[in-house]
Amino acid sequence: MFMKSVSIFTAFCLTFSSLVVTGWAKDEEEDDGPQAIRMIAPQGDEGWAIVDVRTIEGKTVVVSPVVGSEISFEEKNRFGIFNGPNEFNRRIDIPILKIGVTGFQSAMFMKHENGRISLKVDYSSFGKKESRMIRIRDEDDLRKIREYLEHFSEIQKGEYTISKTSEELEEAEFPKFTDDKISFEERRMRFPIRFRTRGKIYLNDGEEVEGELLPVYEDEQLLIETDLDTRRVSVAQIERLRFLGERGSAAMERALLSGLGGVATGALTGALAAWQADADVKRVALWAGIIFGGIGFVTGLLTGARSTRGSEDYVLGPVSPNDRRGNRD
Image (cartoon, rainbow, N blue to C red; front, side, top):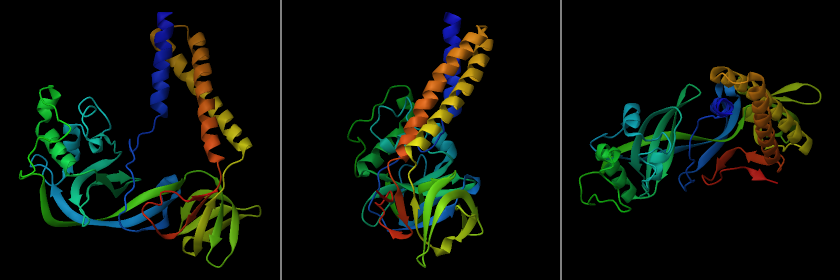
């Protein structure tokens, strides 16, 4: 019984680690910054996406002499920040340090003309360098971040605790607000197209093209498969896109496929785990297949159900920075 439990647990760990996809562990709330331009952008081998692009400007803030004006990749790992919650930052009321950033390269603090403070994060996405702004609550959070960096070794040993209000004096030299200007382009993904998606393209001349949008971006053109053929549409001619929600039958189909995938994955990982734990391979593979097949079915059903909630429109061009999504119906 013990060996069986160990093998099933091992199978669960293997399957979970193979299904989990890393990303931004926490998505910060939107802000009322500069207006963005909504456009269609290629995503390499991952298809294309609706993205909002805007220019962010401000002045550099040096949070602490420990890291200088920029937090490097090595410093990120040394201080255990931007890796998501961990044992060092979990109990500290500094939300920004608990954000997980996939492809992190560097980060800089900055202050905007309206007085707000944020963090510029450079990261790698689809082989390209991208930048993103994350808002910081206030200057007290900056002082807490300075405390965290300068007393990290003591925090590791449990010898230092950051209080709710930073103990660092407001008159201290750091954080230092400089006059060094900083400007960068930020892109926020709104709707990715990574597989065939039912949709409708509205062209500038009033023509409407309905069919299945393909995850292909070639020569500034999109591909849409209609009842007659596959048509190429120039991105410059597109005024609006409408993504159509799937029917309930499509959601059930997705659930069944996900369930079958879970059965296969569970059976294989269960057999491997049982073999490693010297347990009954056939029995463990059966149980693992049933468990992960059920999990896959429920996950697929929930994912499919979300897609049946209605269609969504995205009008290209200038948009408010608070307009996270398109118009639903």
